[in-house]
Image (cartoon, rainbow, N blue to C red; front, top):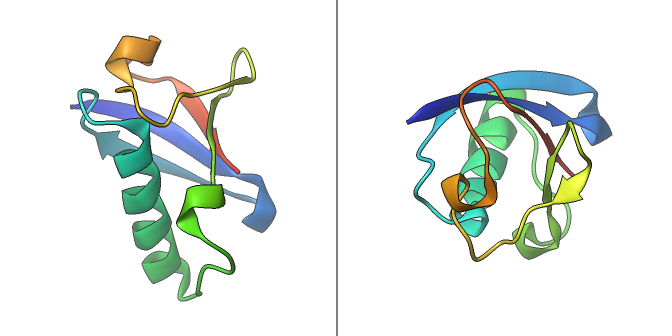
Length: 82
């Protein structure tokens, strides 16, 4: 498990999450979307598969099929969910 900061520009919010770095980015995106929608009491417009996770420092879009660890994401990194 690692702790990452997640920024969601569409709702102008930032969160801190513990995520499993060995899980695919696709799985992480789905879990983040679900938890954020529950917390903010909103519904996701569109499809979860349209969301991307980006490494905030370099602006690189993460590969959905690879794990966070494999893509160099580590503890205390900043990610964008767009």
